[in-house]
Length: 152
Image (cartoon, rainbow, N blue to C red; front, top):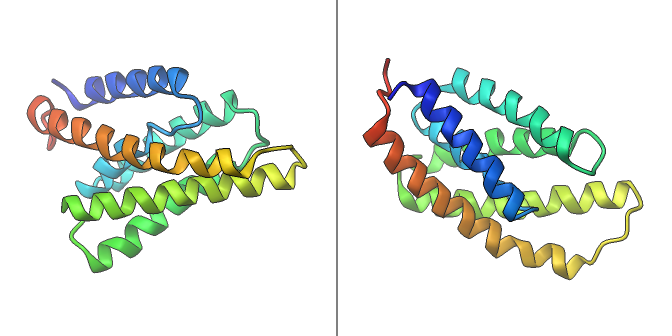
């Protein structure tokens, strides 16, 4: 399967998943796969497309997803200095870091816009985001290895 087709299916799956599990991010595992394969250009292109998609459908002011994605790249770079990015332990730690980062960005943006929110409910999303990132990464990682001509 050509890589562009696989990424199209991945994007549709992530959109569908976010429809059913609002508040969770299903695009980040795809960026992680690109970064693990050292395909920075693909990661940046997909991040740009998904950035406008998520920002356009969200209820917060523009910028929260951009801040989150910058954190994804920064945390990946920092983590890759210490651990092997392909290691599942790296993925688990990276996913937890991103779940906490996602919550911190959401908390900040909600506060800046003077929107009412329940901090307990916002923190309750962390385990779900953490597990969703690890689970989706695992499925996407395995399927990309078996279905996609990675180096075409």
